[in-house]
Image (cartoon, rainbow, N blue to C red; front, side, top):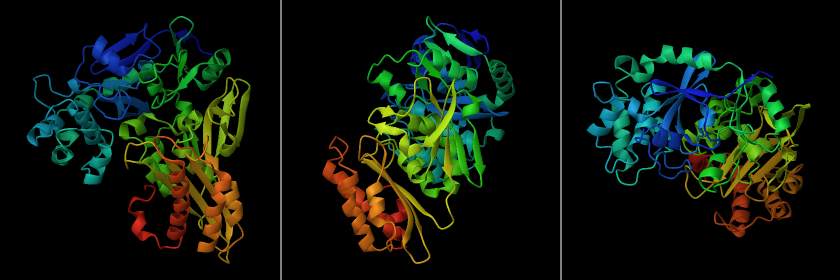
Length: 490
């Protein structure tokens, strides 16, 4: 294992930062407002929903610099090593002239009380940097994670459409102006050394996957943090003590994406945003599901590996992954082992992960050319909402129109994401007809006895699950066209 250092290093706007005394759960928002007095970044919900705290974080991806909007309220300072943090204060020119994104918000009356405005500006700035001439759908997607209570979204959308005409290469931009310097400094920060801060190594940033295995072998009770989109709320809402904390978002070995004829392998640190282009191409329904996971800020931070490791019964991705036959690889100092993802979830709050083990990667088999695959999320709001239930369906028929293979998995129907094995058994080998679907619906009660909670009643969940099976049947028959505008949504 490489030798330890004790300093978190990053760039904040145009200044280099070195911290050798930082709390394991100090949020970026608190650091900006309390330690740096950069108060343009606001605290609204403190749970990654409202977007008032949005900043950009730049990181090296290979030899390229990638800037993404993140929620500062649930992003921990320990995760910022070798990054460039950009706040709204950095956008205006030194002479006080507003950035084109800011000026457009003024010109198109995109702000009233102004509390949410810095977050909107930073989300639009991230879009302005990354996409040439975005359409309305791109703008609305970029603003999924930003809430405005008083202005209304139409003036903000008009501002985004107007500023698309002023491209980054045609105006002064602070990020573009210092890109060469940032790349040089971030490369120098990525030494491969493990960073340990605080007495008893309460904050650890492993430099390699091997170092991560060593750390977890010595501290099996440590909290592993990748995107902190869930763990962040443990701190800001539940006031939980989670130290020691091990931050893995900077490990390049966990950021790999590999496509082969057999399928796709995702490193455990791959974010929803990074996985989206490939998954939406190979498994279109999966891509549409990802579009409904939080806002851009959450998708930029959160990881599919973390969503699995968390083990939540209402995690969005496990039903889809189980239905696709995904395999999970776990690693520790003792070595690696793989298992079907459906076997990883044992009971509520318990997964098949031994002390010292961590999720290393996921393998998703390729879809057969004749396969039908859909996934549907039921929630009270279409965007930025937790699932009441999520159902995934993967079907192949034989030449006679009979069910050859069928995988059905649900989240929100049990204490874990769970496969509907008895429902499948009732349908396999039968003609794919309404009568067969009815047999499957009747068998759902043998697989699931859901709870009633504030998201949905047990009766509602049972009815919705049966209805989703009908919806899947209709769509495979080409009879559900009127339902497919928001396929993957309900």
